[in-house]
Image (cartoon, rainbow over all chains, first blue to last red; front, top):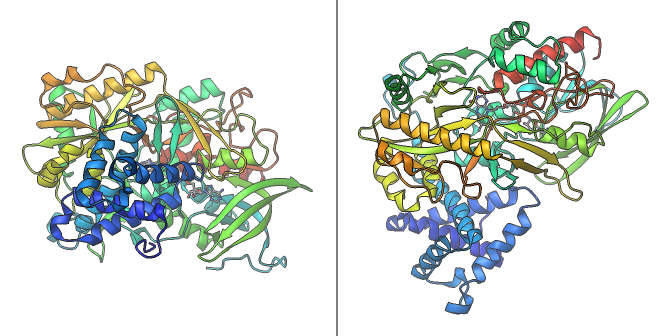
Length: 138
Length: 489
Ligand SMILES: Cc1cc2nc3c(=O)[nH]c(=O)nc-3n(C[C@H](O)[C@H](O)[C@H](O)COP(=O)(O)OP(=O)(O)OC[C@H]3O[C@@H](n4cnc5c(N)ncnc54)[C@H](O)[C@@H]3O)c2cc1C
């Protein structure tokens, strides 16, 4: 997966901020593990690159709209906001009366959380640390 | 493995074969291996990568990026949207699925025969084809007791007096050197190796973009991708089998100007999920896949248990973000269950300038009601199984804490809210002699086209009611057997 932190476009910065915020919301910030946020952002970007071609432009625009949204009230883009403001912004989209805003956060939050949990609990997929009797029982 | 056919003298971007098979999922892999074993020179194209089973853990983030089409993001548009997933790698859906195995019931074939006028398609006529496929791709029951998240469903069904069964899987159970419990019998483990042993040529990373007929042969235009660039190639063959799956096959045919009854009748098994919380630990890492299904309400809807590792639980709980902490705390006491019906219809269309298909779906009021009833029944059986709470994976839906809460569920599924998904797609190019409905003959030959066949889930005339892969393989086996007998290859 591509490193989004250097020479990133506004779109990539917005996705990175989204990934970090989602990871933090899941309390992974407690672990001081910024890598989780970056992992989530990388995953969101990889999914974006692979999604159906007719969905990519509208999603690109939605991400930019999401990034620009706080500009009027807070004078900054989403990716420039401090973490607490970002969390509040995410929450306000979640509770919005506009379905598209709710769906947008739902989509990215579910993918982001899936990625964070994959990093945190990838070992759940392994068989190696279990006693043999608990595996195939064959 | 040779990538380009030997000595056809046409150069690396022009290949001549007896048979080209487009797509290496269950339909394509069975067809290609049979043609190769019949002594034909067969090239099988696959758009996705050629990866071993263990390149990524099942239903992990890595697997989704490596083996799912569009990273699993596909939407059928309509009043109620449906998210669908397809495999895109050598072996197709068989690589990413759980391999739960059924032979479709007799009533399904009876219906297809009468509604689509399909010749010679009874369960007894298909039985030898099921058996032949099961010899290559092994189907086994769990060697020991099923995991608890699975037996819970059975216990609940038992208490309610509902029919429930343990379903076998396309799996050879025996602990292997890595400690993993056995090998899934996906196509890359079974029919694809057979195909290669019989001299077949596999071309992964190669997407067929158009097919055309000239001078009595088919030309397949394709694009081979590698990490740095892509190359246009052309294959010619006497016979072509299109097996790209129920969405991609009609897309390719329509792009190639073949449109009669193609892509007009997509069917699927729409699915709703819930997370259930139990009093005790039922979800332990390293457990085998759950295998029980409730069949009491077939063919209207059936229920089962999904893979429930923490990342999957988090995804299923996305509709209740405030409950995510409960996942962190209680995941060992949680599991994902689903109800799946047979309603809905869709269309597959291509738009100029776009690579991906546009899929339109429609769930009728009756379909939505059926799903809502299925959800109610699922909650009922989970409480009977001892669940303390049931969280429907539908935004805005209430969390249920006891059977007394079940009436809070809406009596029909609100289309806008409905979080419907599907992994079983079929019927976009049905087979049969009814020229008003069918894209192909009773044996998969495209109506009005010489030596052009469809060989995948698109052919099935309607929902299989049960998990479809076994039926896709058996029908492919039946049809290619007939094509070989008819000397069509
Ligand atoms: C997540 C998931 C879980 C499932 N669980 C089960 C289960 O437990 N039991 C069960 O019975 N069924 C299950 N299914 C369904 C089952 O996998 C499918 O019914 C089956 O794979 C369909 O086979 P197919 O040959 O029609 O198509 P596919 O398996 O979709 O294979 C088609 C292949 O063709 C390739 N292709 C498409 N277009 C082109 C092109 N133009 N050029 C080159 N290649 C192309 C695709 O990349 C793909 O690899 C599941 C499916 C999924 C996705």
